[in-house]
Every structure is written in C-alpha cells, then in structure tokens.
Image (cartoon, rainbow, N blue to C red; front, side, top):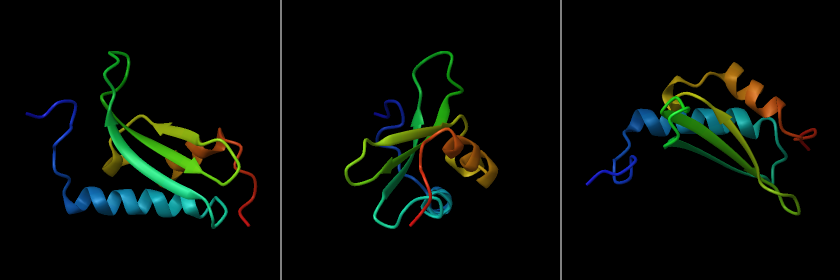
Length: 93
C-alpha cells in the first residue's frame, strides 16, 4: 500500500535531481554542514502537492529548512537560490 508516497521507489532521475539540488546548496554553505533534500507530499489542501524540502544542518546551530513548492525534478537553481536567500546562511568557509 502506498500512503503519501511512502513505499514508492525512486528512479535514477530523482536521484540525479536530488544530487543536483544538494550540490547547489553545498556551494552556499560551509563544508561541515549536512545538507538533506527530500520531496514530500504535503497533505494540506493549500499545498501544491509535491514539494521539495531542503534542510541545512550545521554544528552548533539550529537546523534550517527551505521549501520549493514543486516536485524535485522540476526545481531550478534560481528557485533554490531564492529559497536559501530567506535563510541566515552566512558566507561559506
């Protein structure tokens, strides 16, 4: 049974898109930051359905989250830059 996308196997195109977005984020943060990119199905009727969530985790700081309101394979670098501009990332080391 597939519930909210759980159990759905991702294809290589999704993995490539995830790595591409992670690379764009890593270029903006310090080297010791952990970056996670996930596509989720938002259950809120006001949401667009699938959206991309970007988590930036840095030692000694709270985890920061950015969101792009579209499926992962459709996310552009400009949209990632816009989403990250709303976070306090500072300058990469």
